[in-house]
Amino acid sequence: MCYHQLSPSSQRQYHYPYYYPIYSYSRAPYTYDQCLMDCIAAGAYYYECVPPCQIFKPNWYNPYSIRKAYSSIPINRDCSNRCLTINLNTIKCVREINESSASEEPYVLVTSVDLRRNIAGVSPVNLNVVRYGIWEDFDEGETKTNSGPPFWGVNHKPEDIANIDDVIFIVSLLENDNGNPDQYRTLVLTVATISLNSTLGEPDRSVRARRLLQDITNALNGVDLPIPFALDDDHIGTVELRLDGSDLISAGTKQKKLTIRSAEGHYELTFQITSNPSVSSPLKLASLGQADWRYCGKCHSLFFDGYPDKGKCAAGGSHEAIGYNFVLPHNVPPTSKAQGDWEFCVKCHGMFFNGYPDKGKCPAGGGHQHHPNAYRFVLPHNVPPTSKAQGDWEFCVKCYGMFFNGYPDKGKCPAGGGHQHHPDAYRFVLPHN
Image (cartoon, rainbow, N blue to C red):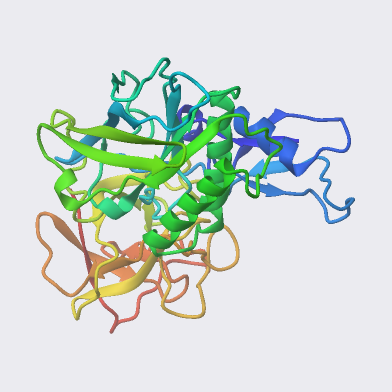
């Protein structure tokens, strides 16, 4: 059985990890390569390959499962004043080196990677490969104009780039001979997904970009192909299109040039960056922290309300949001008035303190569980409450969760009874919109 990530429109109906089958194979043997090609062709862009058991013939996997944990967590797509689209504008043949044909027939594959974290702070593999061309009868000195869709955003719609290190763009130029460009696009998509999954825990963007560039280059040169593939088109070159700070425009357009030169040809590509100021952010406080943290009226704890699934409540069933929408700062240095080590629990969706070896008591069973790449929240405490910041939030010494201590009723603690504070502990004051 081969499993495919939920589509963006349907994935929000389920809690991670959730997969649905797209193919069932009865033929044997069914290879790793065949499963990759079949499932990638069907659109499984987020995956890892896992054999169903450890007993199998060497190099044969029957059946193979494609799955990716956390793939169903939606990514925060809010736009600021730098909501951009990026497109290939023109391509110029500076020098035609291939003497076997009277004219060139090039095409371009742009691998666009979004490294931004989703709303749980997880950085999943999120990419697309866009093909431009084939341009036929392309002679030396000619310039062709592109009319295809933008490669950024990943879904061809304007998206924010707040930091140039949040994206990777790899540009591959090929000459069409006897190959199928759509199959080459599938090849690059497959290789890019494998490459990015292999560096998923790497914090250094440059390391991931270099690995991705090398892996795509090797594949198009016929080195270490992950799937059976006949290389019938000439690979002219693959380079990174690296943005700089001046490319993050807030209005108008900007052009950016890229040269690809090898023994196969010499081309100049011009990309157009377009600002879309009419696309405004629905979260005006996005720069301050993460929104959608809510008070649960059943258990009196703080939980994340940004998913259709409302997690696990100690009072039974799911959490129920009441009152303010809290916007909580994260990934900033702690201070004498702001405590770090607060994190999202992937099991119950509550906020818990992760500063001790003991992970407290989770209503979903066992201790709370964080994700290693999730946000680390830094929460203000022992400061005066305001009209935009509510006090009386405290650490529960029994379950290690954050609960509201402003009522005589102390809610429901997963460790039993009501929540319990420590009289000398911090009193947190949480900002809300």
